[in-house]
Image 1 (cartoon, rainbow, N blue to C red):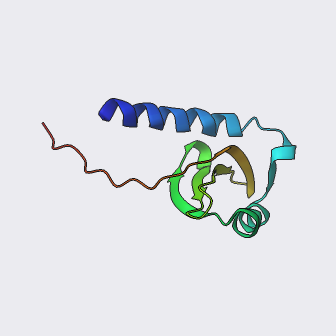
Image 2 (image 1 turned 180 degrees about the vertical axis):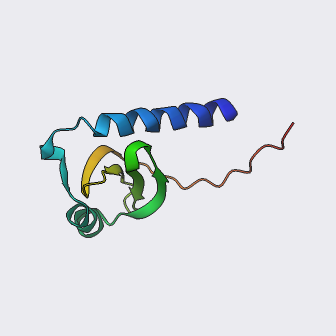
Length: 99
C-alpha cells in the first residue's frame, strides 16, 4: 500500500511539473475551467493539494458520469488540464497500522 501511495504521489508530482510546460491551448483562467467542468461535465472538486512553486493540484469528478479531471492552477491564476478520464470511484480505504 505504501509503495502504491508513493507511486501515485510521484506521478502527481511529475504531472504538476509537466503542467508548467503545458501550452496555452490547454490552460485558461481558473473560474472558466471550473465553470466548464461543472456545467458541461457535472464534475465537482474531490481533492486538492499544494505543489511546488505555489501551484495547486485539484481533482474533479462526477458521480453521475464517472468522468474525472486533474487540473493544476499556477500562481498567476491560470488553470491547466493535466489529465482526464472515465470510471472515477471514491475510495475510503483504512490505512495500515504503523509497524
